[in-house]
Image 1: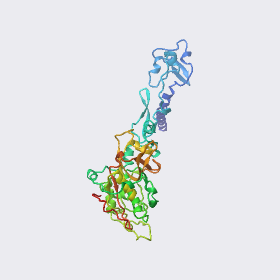
Image 2 (image 1 turned 90 degrees about the horizontal axis):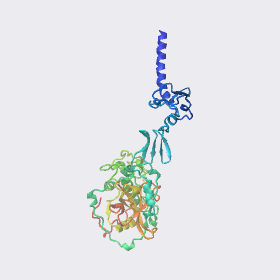
Image 3 (image 1 turned 120 degrees about the vertical axis):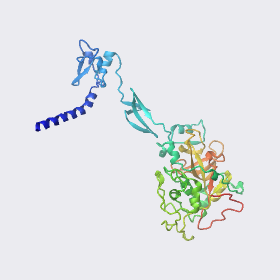
Image 4 (image 1 turned 120 degrees about the horizontal axis):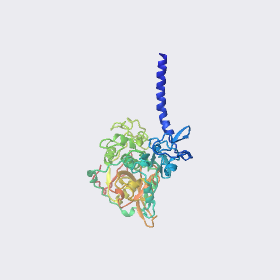
Length: 464
């Protein structure tokens, strides 16, 4: 009985060894990479027709063949010199790699080039390097085109590392995030302002106005979350709280509070409406950034952790202490948002009351902006666009082209490494990228009552 069991065990082991060795045997029968004379040394017949099992030569402890049948099998066992000596042709090349842009890649190798995955693949007897064809957020051709002096665009482009390797559709959906205003909102009439236009300077920067030094908040980074609607609203509100309280309430409003809790009709990291954001600030208010920090940079919005009608006490927030002001217990609220209509009205509002919020249409080339006065180049995918909201903090004129070019000075929300330390300049007075179509402002509800909010000559015909 023991002998039968051993015999059965040995048979099974033999079968497994055979299965394991077959691939090795098949691989070993390919001798094409061994140089030397083999068929040439045969006597009296060096090359044979048909199938001749004796038409062979010893090689590496086995046999290679010089008959016509040696190249008929799936795993060829021809001698290395069979193709040249017997047929007078070069041996067929074994497909083992792909060549692309100066580099070799192994068969089956998968790599990522910018935003597209590429594979080294065998197609018939050819090696093909096949890549996806996604439009990338950073396209070298766009950078080269913008920087080409022939176009004379007046601005520079470069790669922004954070954007490299991302698709254009990711940039539009996750780096912008403002829904185009509804028609009813767009019909909102701008305020009527009366002022002396001659008092408007050629350039103005809210950061350097002596009375406002330290009041304008730094650049924010919304991350990979389409939250510009919340980030820009909170940023404008923060600046205006500092300005209108004369520095007594210099706080940073929480954009995360807006993002997580202003959910009615909003889409979180996939976009939001500015009118709904300002209405939330007006009716409910938000806490400060330290109390509710921004966490949505990865694209995930956490559930709101505060009731709508909360206050700083129930939210367990610590309000800044100022002996000249009563202790704040309510959230930070803004007054009704109003729309600004003309270039000069926007300038006057910024100079008198602080930064404003604007919606702009973003084209492909804007993502690679590095510096200068931006205007759309028409390079790249012009049919793929999205809407973005930003904070205008000033204006000026650029003379680097030999003639003055008017521009807006704008704070973006893509971090300080993008553009001009997080800011950009864009043509003014020509509604470049629709940036002058929908501009909003609001007054901060400070503890110390500010000066007269609207002079009798300034009438608001419609507010949010």
